[in-house]
Image 1 (cartoon, rainbow, N blue to C red):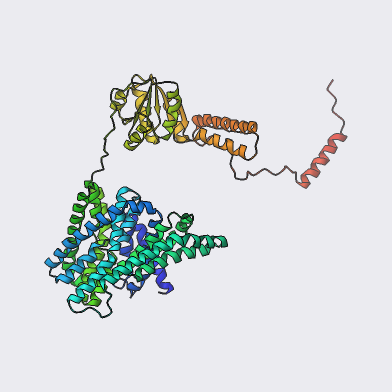
Image 2: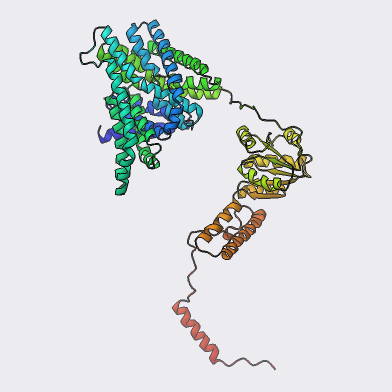
Length: 608
């Protein structure tokens, strides 16, 4: 690959990905489409996409390493049930179902099993990229998805062994083929070696390098560990992604974890994008044109049947209906391992080249359709309903004070009121917050303060003070509007978001407002001054002056708008000072002569 190829790859990504993200189709589909356009069956800028694909697989490897860094060994052990239970059940059931579909489509039993096995292992790159973009990697559902992907990576060894077994049944196995039992032992041995190295060698290794103080050596060492573990696992017959993941898990408790993450991240993003580009380039459009009907039916049948199998397994393992549907949509695709498996099957004589090309096209189309399927599904599914177990709805509440919203701000505000023995009614819309507050001795009711009926049920009509402590200014404005109109006798105290919000609240006529960070920031700044050697009395005077200037500026803003009083704020930009006034030389001489004339002239005598 020359410099022109590198420029073409970067240009395709830079153009396609922002466009696809802008129209809501995601970056994965953008990369795939760009790969098709610049590939050997598009603009023909590349003739050997497989060479790029081998390099680009490092993106998946680095991605799995970063996922491993986020997963402690104890957390991984806690997922063993999902990995070997949920993951194994999904792989086995879907493999059986897809094998039946392939045989109904006319493939011989051996080719059908290989075709199904390649499709049953979903794309780690696509799924992890989509989970990462949606911020769901660390959620419970995301962790279950990671568990299934780990089991699928472990299934690489038995599936490659299956190719050898099927080839031997057809009488086409190579004499150098490794026995299945030997491949299994070697794979387990490789896992043991990687675990041992990570446990006893990696931390001392990085400590030695850290003493050199050379940042570039630490980056090189991080890449060496990731790629070395991946290569070693590949030699043992496992996937490179599994080796990188294990290396990440073993380094997740290292003191160098954050530095490793920062060093690897730039390489991961570029190479992962390159992987998707190369997958798009691998799509043989001549085969698609010749077999478009069969490929279309294959994509629909394989994705539908696999999605059904995934949904059944998810429900059997007690996943909710929504999570089961989302997992089915996410995993109903083939993956990058299919390319390896189909190539091995062709080499062993289990599958012919034409069938392999058609199956590869089915896999690529399924990978491309997955982001679309997930987008459509998310728009069709109704929003999730939170469980209200253990949560009481506000009804017939009484209290001298009604507090709306019970986040961190409100929790602190409540303490002096409760210390004085005042009766406080608390309402909140966040169910998890209500449950968490209950474990700390607070009785919080579910209630939306923007609804008049909820305010009445919460005792707003009889409350002496209503405290609006929500964290969204537009919600606070709506509550203020309702309270001022319906409960004008109640004193209204409101948590303000920023200065613009303060001005709106003053205009609305609230009794008291406070920017949520103002007082804490002043206290923070005062203590910084003291710690830096400023006398406590002087520090207090400085803070008092800052508060005075802020109040003056606020008064000006109330009268003249947000831009008024800007000169009362101190900035760290150098303030230009005017140059001292100087008179030009000629003018100065003239002034001196005039002064001399005046002095020489006698003063005017007053008129008689």
